[in-house]
Length: 164
Image (cartoon, rainbow, N blue to C red; front, side):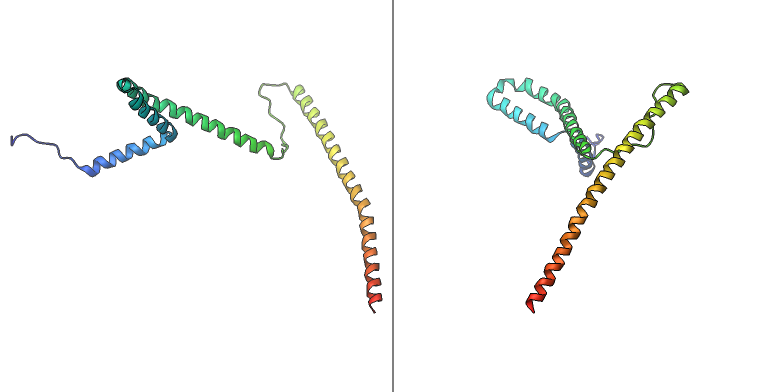
């Protein structure tokens, strides 16, 4: 038996390989799926031990597809949450005209740009009218506040003269 060579097992290398495999599996396996499948496996062992031989290969085969499904549902949920936060932000108008996706003649492009210019002019006029209305409301409110300040000054003078 002196001619038989046995392989040398170097445990740190094996553990490093196993650790690397476990790290890569951790990225693609959903813990909730693993817990659910483990619970299903325990239920099979306790409730129907005669189905162990058929159930465990099926549970192992379901780990990857169910993890992918859970990941897709989670990403879709995050996407709808992000869209909700974006729609609550005030809309900002772009100053660039949208570029047509199809080839458009120069006359049609010119007509589109003129129509957009008219829309922008109407929006500009509406904004100017709102600014003017707010300015008018502010100037109407100012005289009453001026009168209030004068009345307060008179009351303060009266208080100071009555205190003497």
